[in-house]
Length: 195
Image 1: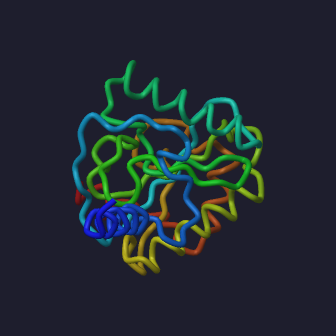
Image 2: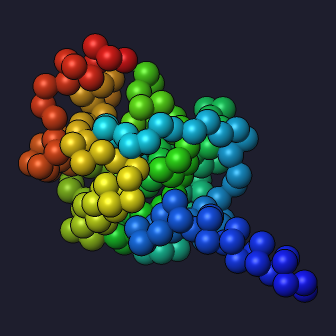
């Protein structure tokens, strides 16, 4: 291997990791995700985070979460004809954050808001049960990392999926939790008017 090619590989690997450096995100190659069919870049920093749930089975082991993320991506791409898995990030009950379109690319999580927000989806159905402490801690760490790395504005707002479209998501129990988060936004009229 030539020195210049080796330097190229090193720079490439550093560039690829930097979108998630320090965030502890399980990257697409780590969960064996498919490449998106198309990408569109998000503006930065973003001021809106939409929290939702997948309304699927939950997972609490690495293997179960990877399998669910792969199945969700396959459904989104093959059945719904999305470019990729819809949420920018998915969070398992094991406390791990799985990369979807990530911080840099437009997701397909909330019609009318995809190009101006990050969608974070907790894996499971949270109408009757709450996410694990590990999952909630992972979400908090991800949001802090997003601010630290300049992906989210310091004054970002968190809303529940149900506040923007007609859905039960993020589930009754998870919605009760996010309403206590410091960046939660109850009055969404300004957001809706700037669609």
